Length: 190
Image (cartoon, rainbow, N blue to C red; front, top):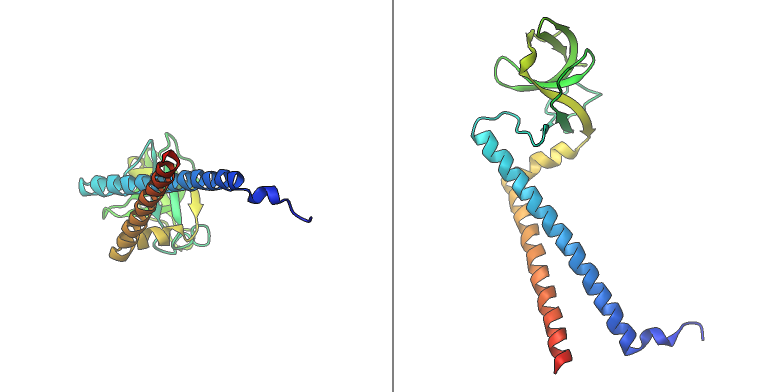
């Protein structure tokens, strides 16, 4: 014979079925955990922003989405930036700061003198106005192109409904799996 019929025996099929159920439960559990973490993160960010914090941080890390082309091609529009609060900054660092109007801006440092810094967008022709170094929130440590556009979409009503729908489906599938496992174990005892 070209294949082993032992695989198709009932006891082997039960072992395979149990393995499949375990894998499904692990994957579903990981997805539910990820879902809960995302909801908690969004909740924290929303509460922190409602309390007046421009760029909420977690252990010195924060994120921002590139909305304009002033730093292209280095930072494409729609990119997600991971920003870390640093003790010292040097010329050439790409930093996120709060401008005189209260907006968050991400540009490159071109000058640091006596606690005053000057920045410039790579695609801009002129430098920005000088501002105190204390206005800097952090240095850009990582850039994820197009991920920021997805984050912005998730903040829309359709995006929020999508997140809730996915979470509901994950919880529903977990309940179905638990019931199925309970039915299988209930039949074995009879």
